[in-house]
Every structure is written in structure tokens, then in C-alpha cells.
Image (cartoon, rainbow, N blue to C red; front, side, top):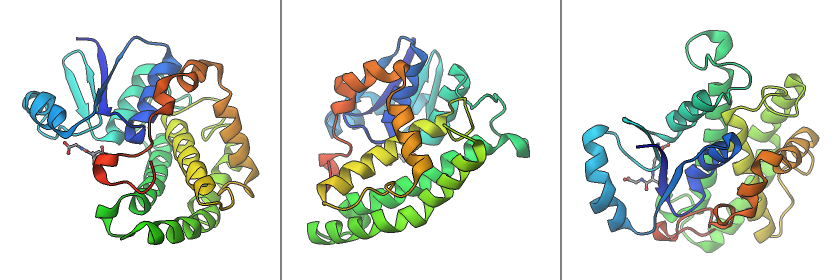
Amino acid sequence: MGLTVGYWDIRGLAAPMRMMCEYAGVEYENKMYSDFGAWMNGDKPGLKEKNPLINLPYVIDGDKVITQSQACFIYLAKKFDLCGGSKKVVGEADDCKMLEYLMEVFDVRNEIMGLVYPFKTVCRDEAEHKEKTVAFCASVATGSFAKLEAVLASSSGPLLMGAEISAADFHLWEMIDQLELMAKKHGTKSPIADLPKLAAFYAHFRALPQLKKYFDSDMYKLPCNNKLGGAYFM
Ligand SMILES: N[C@@H](CCC(=O)N[C@@H](CS)C(=O)NCC(=O)O)C(=O)O
């Protein structure tokens, strides 16, 4: 079996993985599940025999079944040499930068998911979702995004690890884009309006010729979040 990326039919945690495959220009199957049963009673039981942790997203590569989004990101980054110039991602202190950036972005994502999905009980209704999203867009600009602005300043950009792209860039771009869409929906200021390095990063990544096909494709038009989970923002 070749390379497969599996996830719901949304952008969610799979968008950075799809973008990495597109950027690398490889053949892969973008397997999308549109209903609960197709995953839970379809592929999940069989994949569970190969990996007891199986969840969405996953990557299948030959006989390997990888799950947990951050592990999938690192797997694809190593496979396609998207580690900001370094293949040693985990282990040695100096080589943990990509993981550090991935986890920083994952923290931001988890905060955003708290705003988007009712089951997190951060937002119990649409009104609370709007109020807290507007407040978050302002606070992230002086919080996590300000930290990432400083990383870009110290890396000399245009990407987190300098000139060479890494997995963390794909997820950072995705989360900026999702938050931009949320800010627009709620008529609030862009969270990167006063962060020139992040704004330049966002524009640079969007213009990458290796991703033109992705941005023109239906994958980029998928909803960001899952209506099955009752998302306030799609
Ligand atoms: N920590 C996991 C979270 C995975 C997760 O929550 N997956 C959700 C979608 S984002 C899901 O619906 N999983 C399907 C399942 O539970 O089987 C990761 O980062 O991959």
C-alpha cells in the first residue's frame, strides 16, 4: 500500500499533512470520512489492529500506520525533508526547534478549538463563541502570536526556521488562516495586523508555487471544522 492521509472531510488537523504531501509533489491518497459510521465501523477497527492508538488523523505508509497529528506531521516532515534544513527532529537539544514550534502552534490550535466546538464548554452558545473569539483575536496578538513573531525575527525568516520550510510552518499557516477567517466572520481586526513578520510569513507561504495546486483545489475549500461536532465556525 502507498501513502495515505486519513481524516474527516474537513481541513482540521489534516490540512497541514495534505499541504506537506502537495508541497513534496508525491502521489498519495487523501482518504476522507464524511460520517461517523464510515470511520468508526469502517476503517477504524482494522487499523486498530495495526496501531492500538489509531485516531483521526492518521498516515499509512506501506506497512506503517502512524497516528496523533504531531507524530504524523513529524513523520511526513522527515519523509519529505521538510524539517527546516535538519533531519534530526527529536533528541538533541539543538535539534528540537521544529518540535518546539509544532507544540507552540498546537497550543494555539487547542485554544482556538475551545472557541469553535461546544463540547469543550468554553463557549456554551453562539453569543459566547463570538464574544470570546473577538477577545481571543486581540489577546493572541500579544500572546502566542507575539512569541512566534519574535521567532520569525530571530530566524531571519521568511519561515520559522529561516529559509527552509518545516512542518511547523504548515500548521502555523493553517492556524493563522483559520483565525483570519474567524476574525473576518466576526468583523474584528486581523490577529496579525500589527505583527509584520507573521504577516510576511502568511503572504510568503500562500504564494509558494509548490502549493498553488492545493490552494486551487477542493481541499482548500473544505470547511475548517466539523459540523458533526456542532462547530460554531465552519
Ligand atoms: N491528540 C489527537 C487528537 C485526535 C482527535 O481528537 N481526533 C478527532 C478529530 S480532530 C476524531 O474525531 N477522532 C476520531 C476517533 O476518535 O476515532 C491528535 O492530535 O491527533
